Length: 255
Image (cartoon, rainbow, N blue to C red; front, side):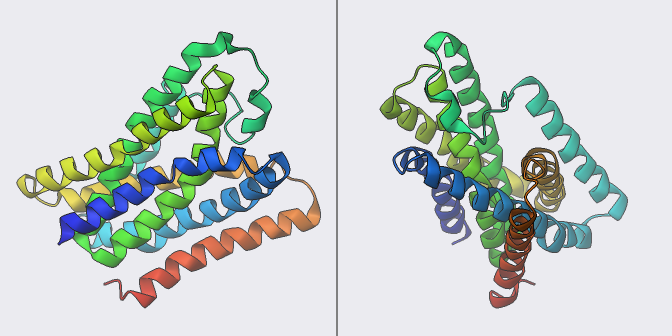
């Protein structure tokens, strides 16, 4: 039954890639509103999942020093990943701005796809690790990843269009890379029984990646907003994201 949950969660996260295409059909004004809400909400969801679910669960099962070392490892691994493989060129949260650019940046599109493939594979690993520990934890983790993927996928489609891909071609390639989360989930499910406490170690590492993504990728975007009321709204959506993750854990009886 756990494998079915893993498949459902990873497929759901993979299908979030389609939102990138749908967003480009609703117009720039609505797209900016969607980004404003989703970036704030995803920040809260990622931090909530890391500090309220993943890390407490991991640190119950492995030594604190080992768990925190893996949290640090997750932070440094994603810093390295983004530094050398996943350069957003400051366009990821403003995808419309790249649409009118010339197609001379074609290699950027394939670099984007390579980074997305790797990123989504490890999303699948995180989802599988969470479900193997506890179903409610798996649901909360899947929700946090899905929320983070909304602005992420908007940026991916924007970069592919910037690189000269047609919208249809960008959609197909982005969906294909999105569904590599299924491969990551299945691979971890098959491998985990052979390594003692692998799920707990993976949760600690995932907690580090969630903290990094929220703090290094999303929060800097939020700081670009200086209007008082909109800043208050950002804080409200962050707290709402944390609250949703906490509520999921309470309602589903996360142990």
